[in-house]
Amino acid sequence: MRFDTSTAFFNGPATTLFKYLQAPELTAISRGDFLIRVVLNIVHPPIFWSAFIQAFRGGQLHENAQQSFAWLLLQLILLRGETATPYRELAQDPAILNVLLGSSHFETRTTASKIKHILATFGPGAPIDGDYGPGGRHDNDFADFRAISMLPTADEIASSQPPFLRASAQLDAPETEDTRQATYLDNQFRLLREDMLYEMREELHIALGKKKGNHRGLVVEGFDLLDIHLGKGDKNCKWGITLQCHNDLWHFKKVKPKDRKAYLVDNRKILKHQSLACLLVDDEIVAFATVNRDEDLLAKIPPVVVLQLEGEASITRALVNIKTGKNVKLVQIDTAVFSYEPVLKALQDAQTVPLSSELLFWNDNCIIGRPSSQPTRVIQAITADPRGDLQALLGTPRSIILDKSQAASLLAGLTQNVSLIQGPPGIAPFASSALIYVRNPTDYCLAT
Image (cartoon, rainbow, N blue to C red; front, side, top):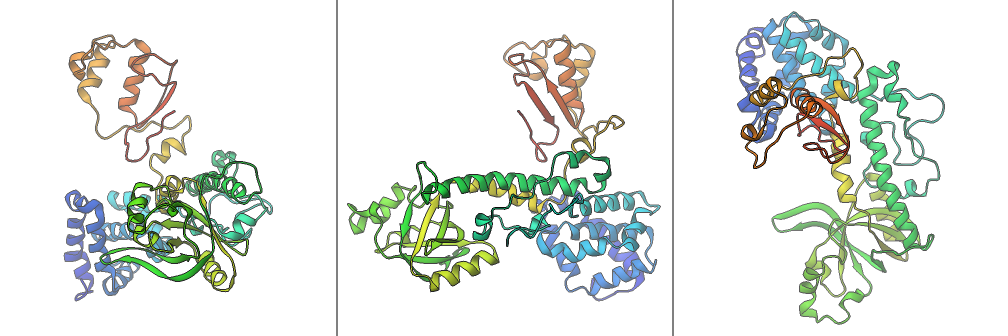
């Protein structure tokens, strides 16, 4: 790929290779990770990629080669994190995107539409009127929600300013349609994260005595900074810092030294793994961290605690204050961060909003999308005889006979990408009071 950068090569062997790479059986290997490695090796170093861009800009590529260029660009903007940034900037160039959107080749236009759709999710969202907008409240407040650290900083917790949250009306306003996907992802992230922070503030205020209540976590006072922790042997993990306690934990009061590790194994709630902890130095909050429960270190006399920090501001503040402060205190926070974190990270990594045409852009003139695969025999049977017994067809132990509204609801659920089925509780086969049925469970699964 790097040996020949001629136009003939781009329109010939290179295009043939890209057509081969688009085969479904290739894209399915390791859930697409194999294809990503191949693509990255093609564009790094950018000997081929730079020449390929130049040939596209110069109008030297044939239709099939233009489609290959569009496909390769799509794979590159789908990369996670900052790796995709330069490719997204290239895709936003009107001289690139408009040519692809205006192509006479259907596949090229389809790929270009996907590129435009993905770029829309990385925009700033709907514009804000007045001074109330994202960014500037503290050291973890940014206009781009993807730059926000998952765990709060000390300044964020101390800030008295209300967080930035958009009103739901901004998602429905016609003038915000171009930025609706970006606004939706931004708002969902901020709303969910604020739920998490509310629980953390409540727990912290109780632990520090600012609010009445029972603190369920552990409070340990007196630490010395030891070292950086990277795991043991071949079992590397996310880096952390090790803090050695000045005094032994009260849990070990009646435990023999040789039984300390076994006691920890049997009592996993003691500094529970991946639990959240607040680090205070001289009674001032300096950082929030995640506990990495290394039982060998925790069983030492005195115990050694491993903390994983996140975010440049928090790391810097914590290391400086621990080294210069006199009294280091650790307050365990009993907030289920582990239940929030995967969803928040998924929102930050999201590059598309599946079913956006039905869920975000729906209006009375829209046609409901239909799934690519449908249970044809079941649909045909219900359509031919809505009151027929479905027992034999579905292989159920009991007879199933639907009434008119139930048959219509089931047909809608089986033949549409998204369906809203409503009814009073207790009516089989739909016992829920409201159900949003989504054809592709890997995209969404919403139910109430």
